[in-house]
Length: 393
Image 1: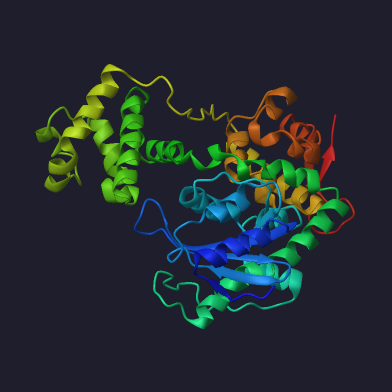
Image 2: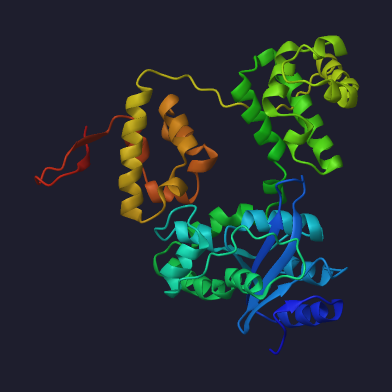
């Protein structure tokens, strides 16, 4: 279709949206800044169809809903590289829920690439093209955008549809498409993008080593900070840093005077947030929340270090055999939990959320055999270098 490289009027966006509705697949990317805000500032949306790429300037278009309706529709498929950040930003700005997303980074992990493989590496591997990387740190808020900035941004979607077609063909040929689709379900699940507060609770709790009886207070303070950060649209640490939240939780001040004794708490913080902090603590102590995020409990049975080493060797060999990214197959956290507290039986093992579905199919019964001592690690019997697992009675 005949169009300019940058769309900056409502009329042109409406025309583009009408064209995109009839496409089978489109490529999507965004440029945003998130360093100084709770909600990242969106400065550019890049779209490509089978005729080429175009950039949309959200700073000059008042109504992005025609684009939002495209993202909500079953067709076209939205092809995005490392999709979660882009979806998170667009969900907020357009107030939509995505359907039919294909993540080329996730698909690449099922085809032997690293779990976090960069787009420029994928473009080189799939298309034989060496894209420019000169504007990685561009300030996308400035207007007008330079021509080379725009071309750099368009490169982020220019090759995605070709990569998508190649990956779909190879996933199907290798019997991996169902595995990919199962893993990708979370990309369009809104709850995937609403669990930041749970992650922050686990992070602060772990770093501050908060006692179990103080967890309701920490949970209340984490939720309070999240709401304040949203209200003022600033990063969480602008309100209060993680380690200070942990210290406040441990000391549990009952007055501004005692709050001032917490290291790192300034008089300005107390003046601005002191009353709310004390009120939050008091309420948490009087009415502790029953729905605190679950904290993994490990028994740390003897032999953790040895089990960790064996599991890592097993993971390396299985990922090589399957030609799947090892981090996608078994995450570091999962390796750690299996080493610290190995399941007693197959049912317990595969009840773990990350070891059900396609991972169970991929690993078969080898993982449970390993944990039950039915696989032994030996030097390769043919005299070649390397290690080899054998089944033992």
